[in-house]
Length: 284
Image (cartoon, one colour):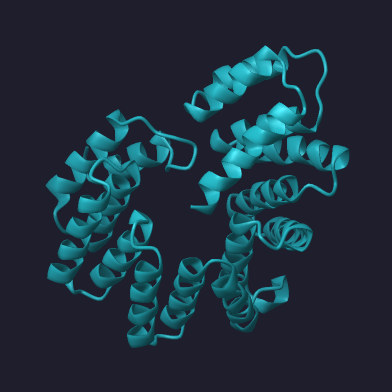
């Protein structure tokens, strides 16, 4: 939910800056995941301000060009250092660079990601996506890089007050990490109850049940998700990924991924490249 809200905010910033027709067309192309065409239009703009660097950075990020994305977001942040969104996306770009870099450069890049996530949250504590990414960082990163379960737990508590479903999800992730699977299931269910119309919350529970080997319950939960959003690309992808990880229903997983690749996607959905890579794993 937060990501959709933030894209509305992004579009609002476009209108506030009096975007040119070319910029508006580039933003439309981005929304339709035509990132290269969007970049081409943006490159032709004679003057570039913070919103332009923002959109350039988003396009490069979606194309997997994380160094170029971070370079563009450095310019956006320099032009508007108090913008929480720019700080957040700069952190994302550094985070992905850390994931794909050598062991020698990864720690420094990861630390930069954390610093920008923390700055984004400090600038706007209600920036839900930044809070979520900072939580993920605290949960996954070792202590010497600024991570840790204690930090993650403290942030999860704040998330519960900001957005209950997201906070319960975060608490479930921590319980999983601590191998307290009873508590994890309880929190996943509470997240689903707090946001019954959000298909992602149902998917989270279905994936958890699958990891626990509770196949029939997982299938029933996926069917409940399908009733909420039968044409959801997110559901198609996540269900296929769950099957592949569990090494079951492989033929169904292939069909789901083929449907996903023919669906109309948004920047919030996994990329077509990710789906194609997953499909290759099962001989698709």
